Length: 338
Ligand code: SF4
Image 1 (tube, rainbow, N blue to C red):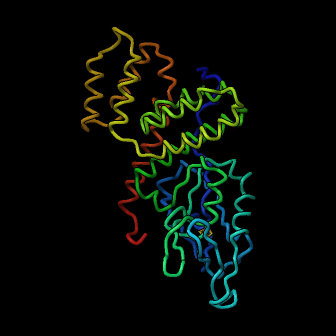
Image 2 (image 1 turned 180 degrees about the vertical axis):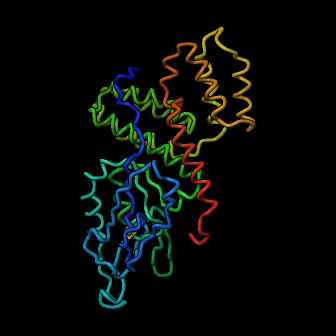
């Protein structure tokens, strides 16, 4: 691996798209906003938000009749429903407009590192949006959000409400940082060498989250005879999917044990290092304890390969920890009805 193939690790704040009502913009059908549905204070300094309202974007005014999703759960239709559109029997179909609007946003979305969607919205909801389907109602994804993620399957996405869960919020921060690094790498022009360098830097982070995905990603890169560009898209989609899985104590312990193997003989106190990893496995110390001890041992060993691993980056974990702690604090003061 040649780390010189990669751009510097991204710095905070990152730019993230967000359903505009979550920013406090009065764009909802009733003229209101949903600023309280996003823990702004806890995310301060991590993100710059770029608000997008697809319903306003397709020319529906504020206030406006609400949209309902109807029909086939596999291909729901978004219809404007209500008095302003001619009474309860009139259902103007805006599915095509919402999809076309999502497509029109792709150049702007190529410049962001994640997307925070408004939950339960027929346009922006990621899941659990009510489908009005006669006797067999169900839940689906909002039409606009579905189109965005169909086009950009690797883009880290979350609903504003999920960010009140510290673990989910910390995971989103981790994914946006990795995706930000990927975007910057891709912007240099994707080559086989760059793809391998990226994978090499992130393999232990993926291993911590999902061992089968770690193997499968390695297999995907085992034959780069075709254009790196064509492998890059499924690669980053699968890598981001793997990182969206919660990482367990066992996953971290496995990776710490692997990286411990790069400590040179005679360096430091190996027994103390092994004891620290074991204490983490048993839940007696925080991850930062064995990790900083491991870093020191690897530095002393001159283990540049192990030290180039994103998994050992202190700035990555500092951002993730900070988000977790701030969201934990925000959850304690959260309005109960959110
Ligand atoms: S949920 Fe989406 S479409 Fe609805 S007001 Fe918010 S940004 Fe606009």
